[in-house]
Length: 374
Image (cartoon, rainbow, N blue to C red; front, side):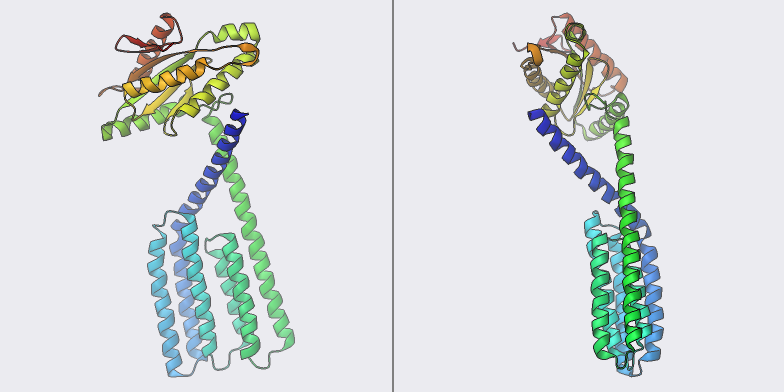
């Protein structure tokens, strides 16, 4: 029951991590192209200004509109630079949503200054605004709320400030705008869902290739990647690092006497137990049929011995179905100034065999001292 709860929590944590990784991927893609969208919006802002100068006759109103569009373009440039350095997609979406809301406010402010705005031309401008909202990278929910709010406000405002709107034109504009929102929303949500599913499937395949199917421990390849990364990091920072070889004692005897299902259960229980004892930064890898390797960055040999003693006691207290008891032999070494990954493995392997030859269920390390707690 405890293992099931732990596995459920681990699965939930993995899903949360997968979503965070997916959003990080979306953020990276959005930051690479946001300057392109900003350029398009700036050009559109200038083209709208040309139209404004044609339809607005008052000099003061022209000046206000010109300054407003210029300030918005400057603000856009400044915030695009900020967007390229934001570290979360949520914050990125918030800034984009604020910018688009300001664009909508500017749209209505300029519309209010038109002497005699043409309803159909302004409707086209509203539809273009909806297309821009769904084109710029953002959360789908933010896009939908902005586009629906802007369109609703547009048709309410134009109904009161524009005289003699043909009912057929009004209905047609509402229908066209609604269709634009529906088409954009369906396409955006569908693309986002497909991209998310594809990403999760790719992540699952990558995880499968780096994780042992039975015990969920890392594979040898993943262990080597983590070991080289942590060894380089610990050397640069002047930190210790330990590597441990773990062998499940007499697993063959358990398989022969109770069946391979019991042996598999023993391996899974031991792997789960070690996961509960170690930190997130530690790596547990399955090396062979009955062997594991533990990578412990920023852990001295003395602290590694204390940790392994707890693990050994916990393993010794395990009781499988039918009263089957298990134990493990441990060989631990600490990284030296010139140690290589291959040398650490060989040294830890030799220490593990020394522990087995001295009676099994023990911990051995190069100082010829075997730590055993009965």
